[in-house]
Length: 97
Image (cartoon, rainbow, N blue to C red; front, top):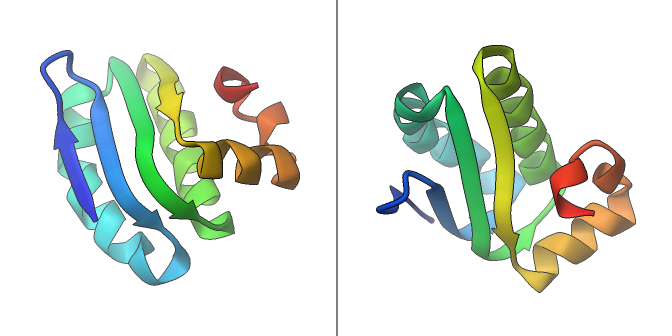
C-alpha cells in the first residue's frame, strides 16, 4: 500500500483497500488529510483491489472533507469502479457515476 500527495495536491492511493489493510491506510492517510481538508481529491487509479471496508473508508473521508470543504474523486481503476457500481456506492459517491 502506497499513499502520497502528488504535485496537484491529490492523494494518490496504490495497492489494496481491503479490510486487512484499512488500519494501515487510515494511519497513513490521516496526516495527509489534515493538509488537504479544504480541497480533498482522491486518485484511486492505482487501487487494484477494494472491498466494503475500502468503500466505507472512502465514504468516511468524503463526509469529513465535505464538513470542512470539498471532496472529489479524480480517477478510479476499473476494479474500483466495478465494486462501487455493484455495491450501490455510486449513489453515495456521485463523483464516480
